[in-house]
Structures are given as C-alpha cells and as structure tokens.
Amino acid sequence: MSPGRPEHLKTFDYVGLHRYFLTFCTFEHRKILVTHATVESVRTQFLRAATDERFAFLAYCFMPDHVHLLVEGTTDHSDCRRFISRAKQFSGFHYKKAFAESLWQRYGYERTLRSDEATLRVARYILENPVRAGLVARIEDYPFSGSGMYNIGEILEAVQMNSGWYRSG
Image 1 (cartoon, rainbow, N blue to C red):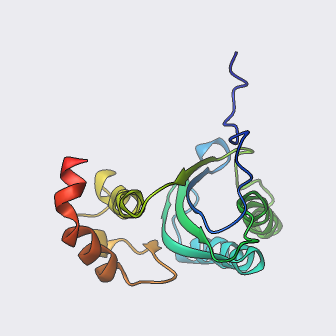
Image 2: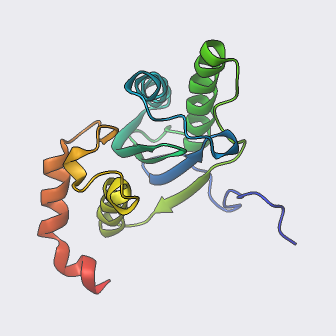
C-alpha cells in the first residue's frame, strides 16, 4: 500500500559525502517562482541552509512551480534530511512573511546519486528543464538556473565532453 508521499530510503542515513538530486514543488503547484526578487529570496535561504548543513550547490533551476537542486555534502557530517528541512523552512518562513501564503508542498523528492556519470546526467537534466518546458531556446538564456560552484558554460562543457557515455547509458 502506497502512503501517498515519497519516502526516504530506510537503509540509508543521508549523512556524509553524498550527492542528491532534489525536487521541491510549490504549494498547489502555483507558478510563483517567476520574478528575480522571489527566486533570489528563496535561493538565499537555500544557500543559508546549505552553509549550515555543509552542502555545495552543483546545479539548480527554479521553474515557475518547482525547483530542482543538485547538492553534495562536503563533510562526513553533512545531513541531507536536515538540509531539506531547513531549506524549505527558511525559505517558506520568509515567503509567508512577505506574501501571507505557503510556499512549498509538504513533501519533496530526492534521489541519491551513485556515480560521477549520474551527476553529469542530472546536471544536464536540471539545466535543460527550461528549454524542454519551452521557456527559452537556449540553456544560457534562462535567468533562474546555475551553480554555486561552476558557471553554466563549464557545466555544459563537462557534459559535452562526456556526451559519448551520456547517449549510450
């Protein structure tokens, strides 16, 4: 029987030097992540949580009604569950204070990545999201995606250099 919500892996503690692909949807899928001010406010709170829980932002993309994050724990004590909780709590608090409404759905989705190849695939998927949605023609034209560690050109170059395994995998 399905509980109707995503569940964490029961045999994994989500602590340490791991990479995660995370997706958070806005409350009732409202299209509210569409202005620089709103996106920057949420991004600032995500970065605050990342600093507190020792996570690096490898790639991110704020779509109108959801956000994709590719994050990596930078210490043996980096706790992804705490990062998720704090990122949503901090950003939700500031959003609710400004707009008197909820920002996030209660649950999100996470996937633990197991290889460097998966990391590049997810980074590519995240960056291509606005192109697939028809919001822009080129990845570089979308204002609400990027990385805390690399510029978009560096990510695209890395993905292009590894495109042989990407297409075959």
